[in-house]
Amino acid sequence: MFKTVLMIEKALSDADVELVTTLHSDEKVSFVVLMQPRGKQDELLRALDDVALGHLDKVVHEHDESESGPTVGDESLAHSLRHLRAAGAEAVGELVEDKPLDRLRSVVEEHRADEVVVLTSPHFVEEFFHRDWASQARHKVGVPVLRLFASDS
Image 1 (spheres, helix red, strand yellow):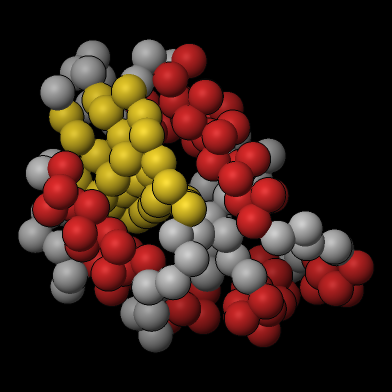
Image 2 (cartoon, rainbow, N blue to C red; image 1 turned 60 degrees about the vertical axis):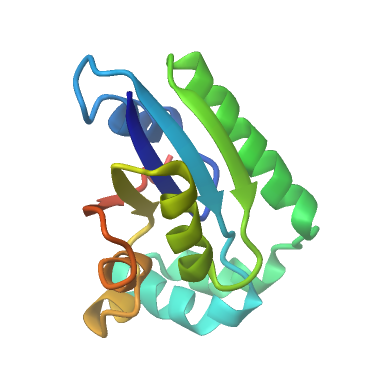
């Protein structure tokens, strides 16, 4: 069985689930999902990314969204795990509050993962300066790291 650590920041869409569950053709895959929802500390970076992507309406209305704390993250993680399991994969996961890359390294070691897949929306500013999860993870874990873009749906 192929063991993948999947880093996400929002609930997986159907397209995301299909993408990650078909990466290895017919080989059985098990996922350890690490989810860290983007919080208030990333508002400026998200706004710059939205401008770069031409999503000006998101920049204007971002402050209008009310965040209800960890329950949104819990629900998003549970949704993602259910969808991965429905697609035939084994899946467990956890929310990561602080230091996601340190937690990633320990999870890769604990589960003897074969790879890390980072599935997030584009973050042009972070990627340009190599501060995104995938760029940093390549220096922290001893397994291949694949960077994929999450579906907008």
